[in-house]
Image 1 (cartoon, rainbow, N blue to C red):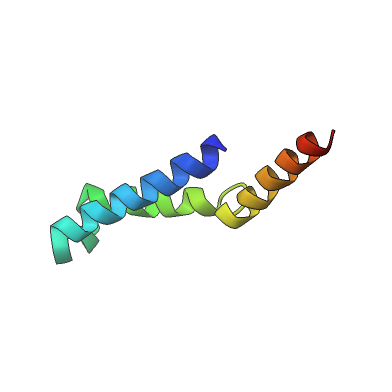
Image 2 (cartoon, rainbow, N blue to C red):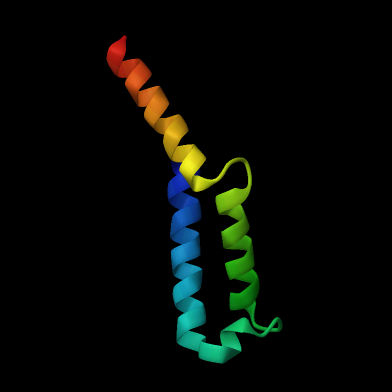
Length: 66
């Protein structure tokens, strides 16, 4: 659950930073561009966010049925 929440929060925050910077946010010399790329990859690495939701739901249902 922590991986899902952290990766989505990092993506949302870095996306807001790019929006604040406007066109300069996409320039590779800006730290915001690097943070956004890193945040986006965390949503994919070790399973996409959607897969993480399915795994969490499966564990919750399994513990509920027990």
